[in-house]
Each structure stands twice: as C-alpha cells, then as structure tokens.
Length: 314
Image 1 (cartoon, rainbow, N blue to C red):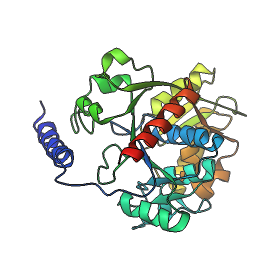
Image 2: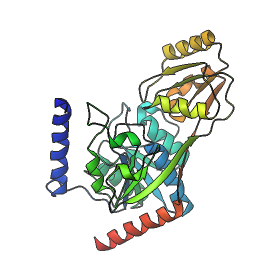
Image 3: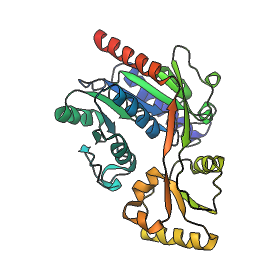
Image 4: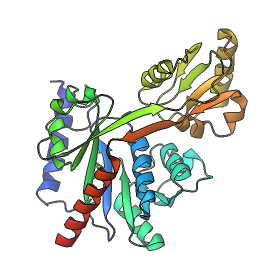
C-alpha cells in the first residue's frame, strides 16, 4: 500500500472509531436529517441525487432545507444561499440546488451550526445533508451513499480516489448503485439497495460544438454527449469547480475558431461558474443532468418510515 494512503487510512479509521464509540458525540438537530454522500472524491452524482430526492419530497408536500459545506466559496461561516448570488459567495453546487429546487439552502463549514441556523429561521423541518457521509459531527436519521463501479476496486487517497474504505458502507442505510455499479461488488448485507439511472437532456446543441467543463469526471460528460450523437469538434477540460476568467473565455473562443465549431456545450454547474461570461460564448447549450430512481415511491416510503421509527425510539 502507498505509505501516504496507509497514513490517511489510519487517520480516517481512528476518527471513525471516536464517533462509533461515542467519544465524539455528534450534534443532533430537532428536525430529521437525511445525509446524501459517497465514498470517493467527486463525480458520482451527489448533487443530481440531492435534487432528485428534493423533487420527490416536494411531491409529498414535505418541507425541507439543504445543508451544504459550500465547497469553493471564498466566504466563511453560515449563510443562507441567495439564488441570485455568485459561486464565490456560496459555492457552485449550493447555488445550483437553490435555483433548481427553490428551497432554502444553507452553507457552513459546521453543518450542525448550519442546521441550527436553518431551524431558527424556518423551524425544525427536514434537513437534507449534501455530501454528508464523512461529516459525522452532525447526527443523521438516514444515510444514503452513492457508489460507482470504480469504488469497488479503488484505493484510498492519495493513491486513489476513496475518502474512506468500502467497508465503511456498514454505516449506510441505503446504497445507491450508480454508473453501472453492481450489488455483487459491495458489502450490502442488510442494506437497502437503490438503483439510479443518470443521463443528460441536451437541447439546442450547436453543430460540431466545443465541449468544455470543470467537473470531476469530464470524460463521462463527453461519453454521454456522444451517446446522443453529439460529436465534439474540440474539448477543453478544467479542474472541478473551476471559476472562469476573461483569459479562459478568450481561449475558448480561439478554440472555437480553430476547430471551426458551431458553438459550445457545457454543464449546468459550469454555467453557474461562468457567471457574466455566459453570454460571450453564444451559441451555447447548457445541458442538464437527469437522474431517475428505480421504484422511487417505494424507496421514499421506506426511508420516511425508517426515519419515523427512529425518531419515535430516540
């Protein structure tokens, strides 16, 4: 094993033990908490799943808010996301969630404090904890973990992408198989197993576009475009959560000219990070992600029943 990965694994294991044994007790909010998380660093579809879960909750008339760290923001402390704000204030994914779901989204390094802020402002309603599997300082009533096929054989950071070992799935209530992951590849005994299908909805795509994005797994986006018969004239990839500059826009326009492309295609998250630069890249198609949960009504019923039983027994 990579020495740094071994050290990282030992630190993660020791930290989890402190929580498992109750030496570090998590903070508990008045409202129920549903955590959505994963094992690896980025690119498994947590944000689309949070939005899918949010839409399902809305169909039942359940009021909720979303608690997020606000990765990539330059601000600090607990803040209520303004849907008309900027990614440097709140983070790109919290902004996207706030705009798409139209529910309160609160960012904060300390998600327990973010939850207390939410309850002070909106009451003790349901909380959806975004990217919460490793944030154990906040007690949760239901843990959802998304996995991909790569997670089954990957290594711990920094040798691989795993933030904690696959055996940590024992803490999960529901494991979501994403990207073609199979149940046989993971230790899922006693777990609810949910399956999702993730796709894209390209509309008004320019001919032979330049495809660009700053996401964790950009090649997956390109493969999805090709599956819908969209063949890029050129590609440009940036690091995840990339904040676009005037220089980037100039380089993209030059790439369009050199490749004789008809325009641009990017993701919704990148559209957030483009900000006022968005209009400079017209014609531009912003492609939304679609995620579908198999037997969604039954999955939601089961989750809400488990949460209610745990709350009664608390």
